Length: 278
Length: 317
Image (cartoon, rainbow over all chains, first blue to last red; front, side, top):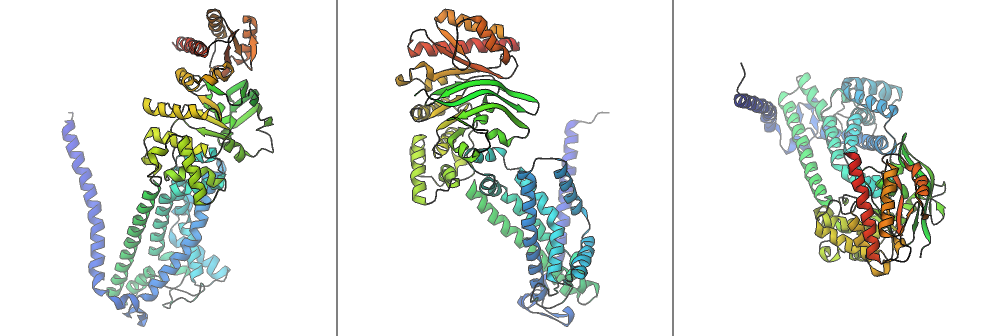
């Protein structure tokens, strides 16, 4: 028996609608749940005071600082490396077996569980190189973890810049580097920044790799070699050790809000940039 | 005048194993307008890109033979490719404004060449936009995005953009193929004004366009209008057609680098090395035994081209 195409159409439409609805519902539920549990704990003191008694009391200021610094170090290391690699792979070499191997390697790297990165960072940076549990160890580990994402997204962004722009730039007497900096990168920037935002989100939320390499000291870091606790690690410890569930949810809520805020601000700035350039 | 600016000698270009231009001989004179006519994929654009070495950007691209500009081999080891490309400004078939403001598009070349200073750049931009015939339309919105211009305006912007390089040659790759008649007319107007200062190489499939651009009385000298023709498999047909033209119009037809071909035998000898499909065949120049009037010559060129294209269509069918 053949189905009436119009009926199929209606069924498919309903199914697809339902799938979308479920996805969004789950997302909204998680955010709503965390915020409902967490928001009551959050006040000015929670954000600006140091923790008291292993996190039972006081605020989460140290962990906010720890998160920001660690993420900043990771991004500052990974962005030039990743974007540089992407530029090299797309603009300075022809596609060959070597570039394919590099790309495949980067993709494999992206699939490795973060705890493995944590272990690697622990062995290499913390013990072998003697950085100890520190911002530097944690930042380097996170940088390696997000590097594949940045390479991949930057590469895609650079590849999507129409090749005629390059031709035009060269035909107007541009060198390769001028073409890259004045034509390719401005056009690819939205894509590159998207990759960086994704990476920031991943770094902020990362727990396993950080706990192994940056430690969990509840002090304001004073140098790259001080140990530091990020919000996600703080959340993990509070919940795992049963120190204070409300404060754990509070931390989680701050995390979520921070990531949302970063995304929204960057997209706003990006739109402004795109409007200026096109 | 009539000094050779570009000399192409036994020049071939390959993508991998495939020849895109084969054994091409051609002289281009200073301040002439050279029209290149030919069907798609016959190597017209490749020829332009061989002159300013844009082909270097394509993988597996390889050349043989000689291209000399002002007596210097442009594929020689000591050639500054950047300098070379500034000398040969190129306008592409589809207008490609960079995603920047109108001002920045024109200032792009000078900026990359190291010109600094807003006042200096402003002068250049104004001057070039005026020459490109766009100034009046955009003078109040130089800082708006070039992507917001219409197709015709974008193409004139591209023309202005290469003028800012102060080139000696202008390479035009079917510059009006995607434009409406009015935009086409405006571009042609600009080109007509430009031709006294530049050597122009125009790829077009529109013989009338080639004629229109070169219709100024002071350009009535026949040397200035040549047609490069392409893609002939069957040389006997070509020879027949050319002979017919010669007989009908009572003139000689030159093939190759200004070599007078008065006998069919000689003609076929010259034509034979080019017997490969999809390659530029040679230069079909036309010259009367006595100096003909310019209009007649153009008609002749046009007839030749029409006959040739009809012959091509028959080949295809």
